[in-house]
Image (cartoon, rainbow, N blue to C red; front, side, top):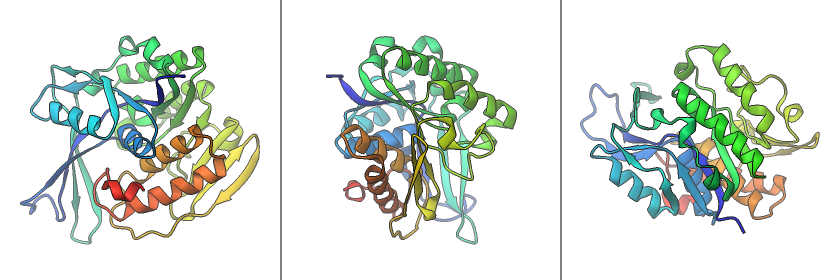
Length: 292
């Protein structure tokens, strides 16, 4: 029996959410968000035993972040408080009601992750390791840590799940993003990209790159590829208020379901429902009732 079902490596930031443009906003709702952490919360709410590998700045937000994650059932033993600042991002609405994101994350504590932060015994205590292209993008050290974690997982028989989660603004260089994706794919057991967003950096069709892939198509649902066989799974009905974190919630729900023994197509149906429920709420982390 391994200690954890799902361990994730990445960065979580402080979130400030406004319902108008930042230039006019007077009130913000404070929360937190980060793609891997969002997925871990979703998985924990589905009953998975989860843990986060990161670095958390000891600024005024740090202790509260760790306490909030622990309250969700996410182990933070490998996400210590360290000297430094935590990344911050703002979600606002423009004059046409469209979301916009403003980030302040350069030099954050989590971006200081390196391969030396990867504890082999801890990674070996998991059934599955979740990795992300965003973690690879935040710094060369975090990219090296991601690769080290993947190698460690492969060496200890731990499944590796990978969401390329390509964000051009983070990379600034599509070639670097493609190289980071390519270096990780040999260690990946479950590939969970979104298309068309990730198409630019994938070296081929997802179902041809690994035996187990699930391609997220947003409102069109998803397709499960298992050993070359494709199964389409329709999206669940949704009221869209904010798409932030919906794909992350999908990742966590899907992996939790697969790890507890659900067939991939059935797990995808569950994940579609959880992602749809998240869409009705603002911010990266929905209320608990949206994860039932």
